[in-house]
Length: 588
Image (tube, rainbow, N blue to C red; front, side, top):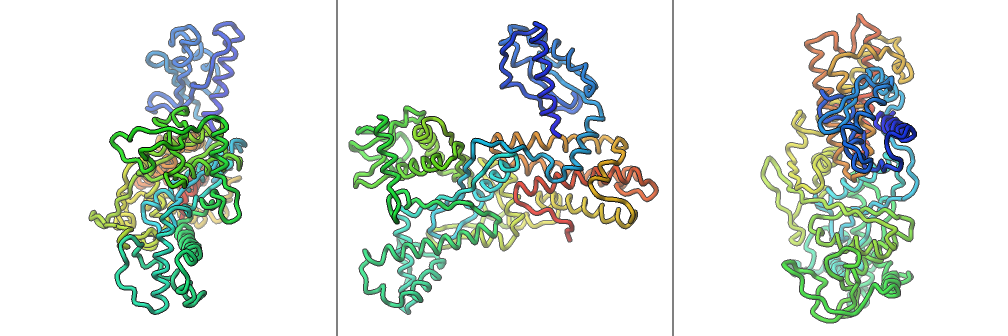
């Protein structure tokens, strides 16, 4: 039950009635009309902006239009009070019975409370992580992994058809460096003393296992081959080894992609057609490619810029700042050309809505990629890029240094093994993606209210403990959702209880809003706020026995409060599931 959708429909009916009565003009656009919670509970339960956003189009003063709307809404039996605030905002206070109905519906729905109806088209592709397969993932990769996975789960819960995708960057110069680094470890596995790792190669010991595998499979045979001959074989083995490690690390984080898409497959390799060439020719046929020169970039280095005449994509025609090169001076494709073909592939695979999760250092790449998506989809597709800011890894407030080039860095897997999947996932999402995150390895395992993940999980465990207590006190009490939904929920009259019921009522709208804005952190914020309210009510019951969830002398109030606790537990479990965190029954 979504009271915001319900009253949006009733508001639309009121406006339609006013049109039929000739009191307002027909054809008003309701696109900007919203029914939302009031910012201050003292002002009521619902805030409506209809008069403010429709007044100009209706040719009326906002308060005059608001008076017409309020007069009709006040007739609704579920409305306790309808008032006009300020220049024309409308506030509604609802009858208590409305929230009783919401609570009953939430009890029956359980963890499905808030789930959206299937949306159908467009299908959504969420591409995230896509770390270069040149070594283990670090904590920064982990933030993008958690954000992308939680966003995909949020969209799916809201009713969207979502595919999770990983783009394997296996076609650039970095994978040739990886292959040469692995070949060095292969020589080491054969017993050769390799000494210090030469500068320019990957020095980490994560390639030792790749070298050992090559030695087992090929013996010394590769030593007799030229680099031209052994490089493709070793490159493939190294990429496979790194991707197996990345998949294991992601699995430890609870992240599973449905699609792993190879960049090499776009370039006509391994038996595939050359999708990059096809994409360029398609753009050329539409006069979106030309030969020209570019001025040097202002203030910021652009790795694709060269002072020569070159093949350029008309990116400015689709909102970019400058046109962009597609071919390097040696005739090979720029990274951008590959990325255009890749996103064209997404569209041809049926994804009109694309979401990419990138590191913050790729911010300058966003406008050109959005321009490219507009071009290759004939403006039928959309691309939203979510940038994840840096993670500062701390231990008791002291920064832990990382350096992938030197091989001296803390891997994501080490962090997961130290503090656990739940702590990593919740803390990665408990801050907006575009803000820098401080991740303190000591703080995230504390069992205190200052540790958000513990605080939320403990609230769920407390709910479960209440049911165990109730089963002991009333062994014959039916604790099924169906039975609890029939309890006298009108007995829940304390302001703290009512406040939490209103939060439960707001959960479906929060899910819809978070999904629409691609902001999964809102879910983490919501369950933390709900947990805080529930813990406060628990503590209030210590001083006020009549508020205790299990009352040995009052079976009726116990049933009502167990229904209430069941709904709280369900919403906590639902929100935690969206962000990929477990909802424990007990915590010790």
